[in-house]
Image (cartoon, rainbow, N blue to C red; front, side, top):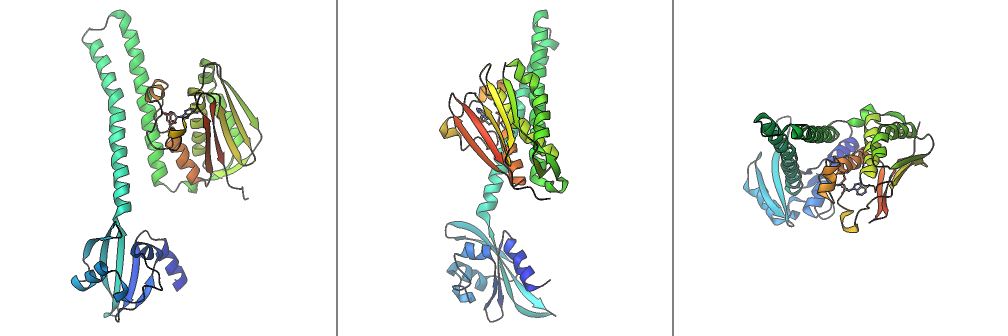
Length: 327
Ligand code: ADP
């Protein structure tokens, strides 16, 4: 491996790395180190140029130790290690970890777990309540059917939620584009329209598909999920007898509805996990609060751009623009 490759790799790290020789001269500084130290390779040439806290850390600890300091209002963990070559000490490396980022990621994870637990507990409580009434003979004959219907509805909601959580965690973890292939988005949109036809009919909503074949490099199952979520929302948040127009053309997929629309101040948040404008409407129509978070994630994985246009009481249009297709 040559020096350019090595510095490219070090620059891609989320941690800051600074390497010094025995005289305390800076031999290497990656981008994240410059960012955390608020310095550049020109202003940081020697160990003495380091901010006071960091410099003091070098003088005060032995190799292999860590300490957390506050740098420019950010919590940063410093770790210092002597470097050796053929048994001889050649200098030191300083590693800086941005705890702010880590703590933020921990908080998001924690909030997600708390939300999931809450979202699962609610339907489970009602399923168990209805089953208990039937079991204890407290439900009249005419109620049993109604209760069974509610149990089924709540179970379906839980199933959708669990399947959305699985999709999100797969998106978080796996190297998804490994399964990428050439997909015709128009054919996929046709299939999805077919799948959701009866849901649309139940609400008297008509769905129109226009455009033509459009090749996209991506993961078929995820692209299908993306179209499904957008179309499902366009039907669920529509008015009775409204319309939905799906268009696939010019590297774009757009789904436009004549529904309730999204108030301006909610628009920047609806792609967050579990964010809903109207919780009861979302739940009553079988929503999980994760559909658009999944859409956003799938777009990011495919290098696609997501745009939302919406006006309250008039309707919503979500457009996904895919990158140019290269054979
Ligand atoms: P949900 O499962 O609740 O539909 P989503 O993540 O798919 O969750 O959407 C988040 C929220 O954004 C919804 O609860 C709803 O308030 C709003 N929303 C999404 N799509 C539309 C739409 N086409 N028209 C109006 N509101 C929408």
